[in-house]
Length: 92
Image (cartoon, rainbow, N blue to C red):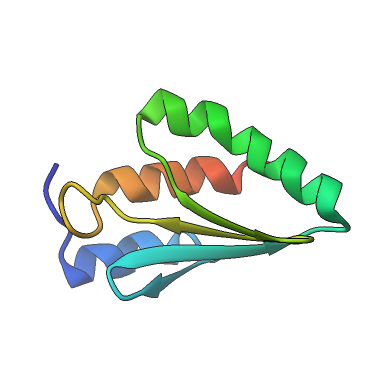
């Protein structure tokens, strides 16, 4: 899978307003009512991540979840990252 150009990354980001570019990754920060709801959301990520064989970096802090995507094997962002980001955005 090929790395995306800066222009391609910006094009993809316009369709994903919950995500921001941070270095060579895209990041989404979500806040939930409580810890249990945050963990339930993280558990929803398992199936789409496994199906895509693409696993986000996750940070959980009580009711906050930070999701970071990058294609580590390629050393940056590919279409795979934006495909999974779009699926994550469809989750509760």
